Image 1 (spheres, rainbow, N blue to C red):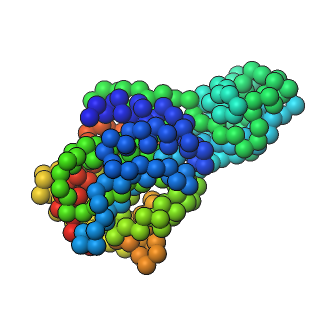
Image 2: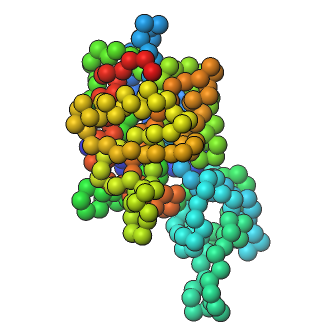
Image 3: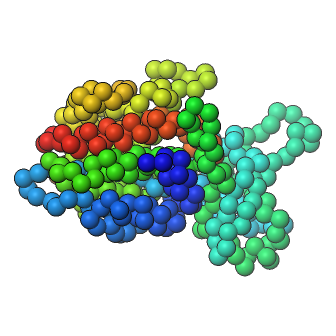
Length: 339
């Protein structure tokens, strides 16, 4: 797999939580070559691989499609766009960021920023209700194309960096989607000891709603949430972060199935795939929290890709971590038993 190409394809479409149709269409097209059946249902993209049988466990691989962003709330009399948030963000980073408004047409804009020359003292960190977007248009013009409820995404195309790293605005969790696609490529044509569903889910950033619906519909025996986690950066606490380039992080938590966790670790060590532990003392903050309480309960696990600058316009990952996450998922599917 050419990861730069696939990640570029996955990060190009907008998909602010609740408005995922553009990325859903791309995801379905990329998933189709690996699955016997692909469908879009309730906003989710669902792929089925292999015939389901009561003699074999059914495994769900999940990554969420949505990204953090904004929703238009109003257009001011002087032509600026007011917004509310869709997902959690650090508002210290917002001034002067490039954004794209998605209405009847796409309109580029910039989040307003007061020059330091005009500031009288310490800079005030704006709340989301204080943010405004400058598009250059007057109110009467904007109202032809933009309405309250339209989504707004960061306008930051994927950029390659040195040492196999990339930066972009929606790598959470488009890199998880890429890892799943790579796992499917690795096991293509193999007779697996399990049947597999793939869920590219909606609205994770605003309450994991897509995962709730998708897991209820699929009713898997085992579900793996493939997401991102914090990568160690300048000044960060190494106890709370994974190492970029250190391989996927396997979740260890009282809310997860210990059997699934142990099987993931065994698969990584058996195939000599680098991995890191991600110890969480309670809930995981991923779709696995929804999977574990679906119907009568699902054996849930997490596999996470270290990522720096989460929920910003410039998230950074290392491609080797995405590749090794895909290798781990493939190794798990080849060995899969009950949990």
